[in-house]
Length: 172
Image (tube, rainbow, N blue to C red; front, side):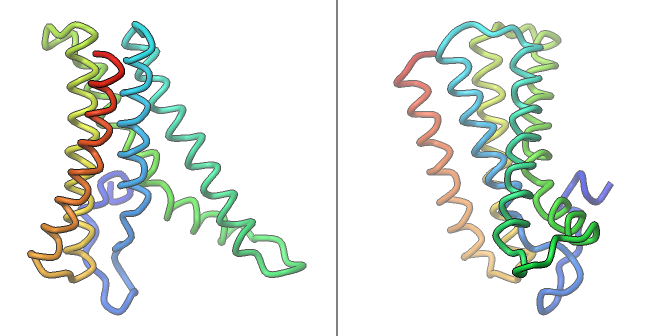
């Protein structure tokens, strides 16, 4: 349960213990928002395709991040062992987690009576909202002040709004 909901982790002290690195979750949220904005702008995708696209994109980018970190941090002449692969995989899992809520928003949208355009906006809003929340919570877990956490949240809101503006500019 803790790995699926990163905000349930207790804050660590001095870098030990709980998770304070929410970079994967924030990055994954930006990625999910970009996928939604792009997919909904270029044509009408059925909900199942958008849901699968979000989840698969999250998995592909997670695998790419894990591989690039392992390749980039490798000690010369020494292959990464299983423990290192698992450690990096867990650290970057937030990229995949970030795709789940927007994908769920797409999947439940018919129950809310939403058309494809409204579904895309709901999923995009979900991705941006979680990006802001994870940035704020990550800052708090890293022992930032509430003011600094709020500043980080606003910065991430502005990044999300850039994606929203681009979606609006290229089509609804």
